Image 1 (cartoon, rainbow, N blue to C red):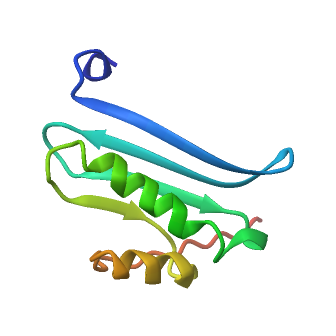
Image 2 (spheres, rainbow, N blue to C red; image 1 turned 90 degrees about the vertical axis):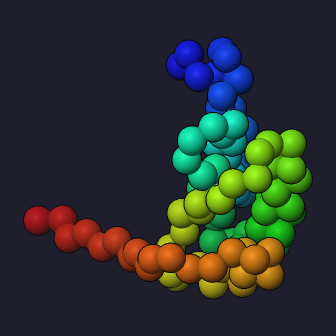
Length: 104
């Protein structure tokens, strides 16, 4: 989008690999203007509790080059490892979401 070309926003994606498989992904949308920065993180269950701290630290270090504004993170309540890490960095819960689906 045009906002990328003029430097208003930039997407960063970090991947942690386990040999040739993906162990974790953090995708960060850093914004110079407007709404809060946003990121989402997915970690394979086998890697939970092992890679989150490094990914959160990388995202926060990257955001230090951007204007100070809020950061919104999407995560599920069933993921306490990352919630604890985020709370240690000053994040607070704004809404809880757990999704469920039934295939018929």
